[in-house]
Length: 120
Image (cartoon, rainbow, N blue to C red; front, side, top):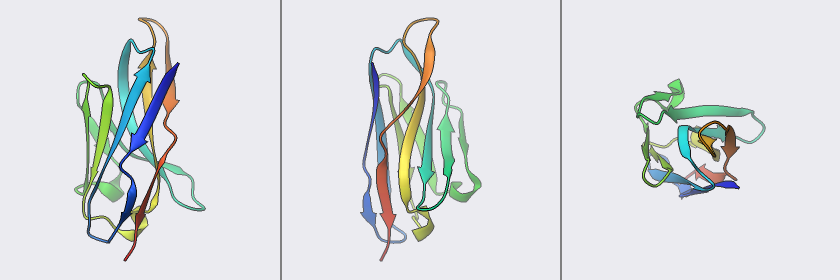
């Protein structure tokens, strides 16, 4: 009933930039916290950045100063602007959202993931 669709991944050289987006659609009453996670080959999934509905943000230490999370509540969409990319940023990036399908019922939903590869 609720889908999260990511876009914007790709191959970029070290030092380059990419902007990811994740749009929520379906039976949505409201979208609260939204987050970006990533999973590198052979590693566990880790939190990259999060943003509340009101715009409060938090970042993993590894990406502070390089990545910026933002959102458009009118479009139920979250973005991740990634600058100064490093090879160690290579991973599949997933978005996660806390979605209310009515005033009382909420659940976490995940996107399908988008691949980011940083290599020369």
